[in-house]
Amino acid sequence: QVQLIESGGGLVQAGGSLRLSCAASGRTLSRYTTGWFRQAPGKERDFVTAITWSDGSTKYADSVKGRFTISRDNAKNTMYLQMNMLKREDTAVYYCAAKEGVRWGYWGQGTQVTVSS
Image 1 (cartoon, rainbow, N blue to C red):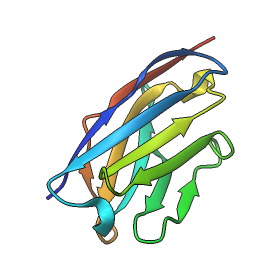
Image 2: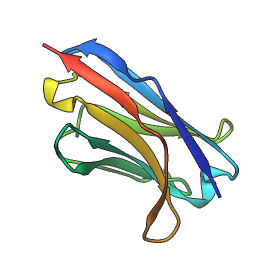
Image 3: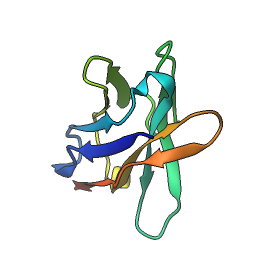
Image 4: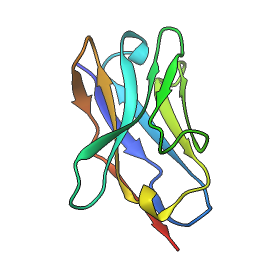
């Protein structure tokens, strides 16, 4: 079983940047596809981006393409989300997750990102 802990959230002005981290323990992330999701107040949790650990292939939601970058550090067993050109609509709780197979079965506790105008 893998445990995930996010960090790096906070308050930032529109147009600014933040980097989120997701540190894993328990198992190496190399056996999982990992990703980021977000949930804004009153809305469902939405997919943001994912990375396949084995070959580094990535996928992004249209709303963040060109602004967000997912990456990972194998040696640190950590995943990152670099968020640039942040918009007010990016305000949400961001969760990292891992899946083995088709199900996103492992989740972090979430970190708040607030973008002010």
